Length: 208
Image 1 (cartoon, rainbow, N blue to C red):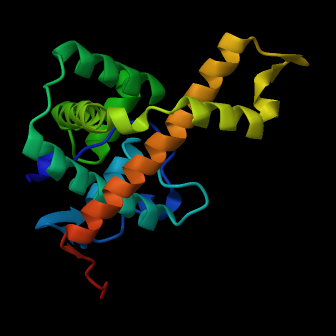
Image 2: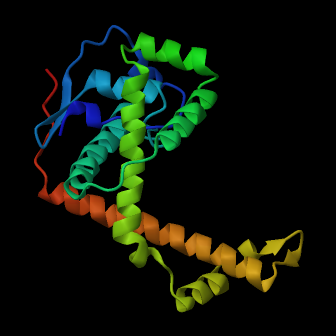
């Protein structure tokens, strides 16, 4: 899979450990012959394309997300999900620029890390195609059963109260469905990625 296929979307503050301009570039991982470099990871965090997990080492966390991303995209490319409409890509790019403080601030960060807008558009396109693939492949397994909804309602009563008053039956059912569906989605995607990792060739070169 070409390196241009691997770019992600969202804004966060650049972690100091990733921001040092004096760090010499190096390969952090080789995933199915796809090289992930230190500059890749630093740029993706600076642009908000990868969010390191809260409380984790920012470089290590961002790298793990890169590895997952490469594996998911490789799987997605095998099944050729629908292409996103140009308007979808533009809308996502506009939202990204807004979170970055506006187009000028966003483009300044791009220039600082040696990338351009087409790079981000490719990343957004990959995001949207991955979402489409996940919806096609896992939609059925993410739908909660009525029993699961009832169990969630009984086990989390405090979530179904607003201003001291219980939610209506329709509101409670909708909230329970959203919570259970999200939990199932997280579990399904975790299992999928773990399976991809077990079958993949992942090499982490030792820093010298």
